[in-house]
Length: 49
Image (tube, helix red, strand yellow):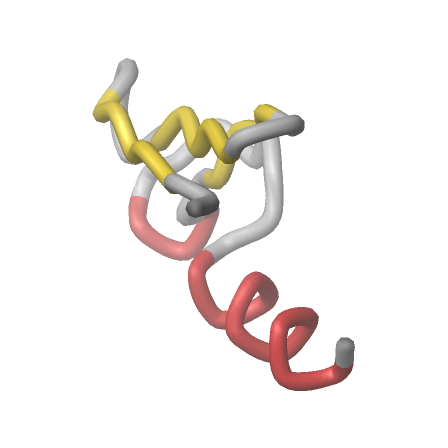
């Protein structure tokens, strides 16, 4: 079974870890640091795949 773990980092950054991958999500619209895609971009990319 695949698992996904989300851990809060600095500001609005989230470390997303799946069974085989890890990446940072960040919400640049609300004082984030733009280190990764925002939640809306993640949703659109998930729907697109």
